[in-house]
Image (cartoon, rainbow, N blue to C red):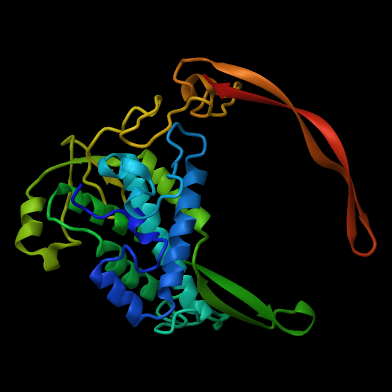
Length: 331
């Protein structure tokens, strides 16, 4: 693979695996590298949450960082890789934008670009999350890891942009009342980022409806004028009767690997031993999760807190109860 890797934003040493442009951006924006590291950690957690009931559950490699964090799945141009790039770009955008409003990055502050005329019963105030700075920084920083002018480059750039748009398009107005006894005589409002969970839910929907694309004249267009065309190319769907993907859609051009069996080349453990739901007909169900191999059932005795009571003031006392827990695991 000639493009960059989302895992390259998650180093042990903040500057160890960054490219020259990324290091320069980090030096110019003191405090931002901490936000980037936080964002990429959140991206991993969100990916694992979104795919917790799928055969591919966004596994990471133990004690690995940088390019090897997600295993060699990122070498393929499948829809799982598309999601990894989008959620990483989105999480960096989210974390940097929020850090600006919190005063953690010296080169940015609160965002005021969304402000227009105040409403009849409210006025602008507070500190809006600075999505403008976060969006621009993420575009320069995350996309700087991409190299080459081929189809994979275009796929990565497109999915990075889709991740950023998933954050910026979901900004909401948040308000607070002021006045005697909660009268709300004055209401001030500011723009707030969506939660990363909301962004993850949105991108998971895009993953399910991702567009398979093909090589087109767009590759030549980008090669002729990289700077001007970098974000303006149009990827073509593999099937001509499908609509072209928008800038908010996820794209891919290779089939996903078979996630049923352990794959050493990809660093994927397979679904042997995975928990499954024997009453579900969905992707988390034992039939699909176990790929038809069957499953075994274990009954475990676990200790849990129970019959908790609140004691004034301020203590909670609980008993410890033994309960039986039924688990189904794939063969």
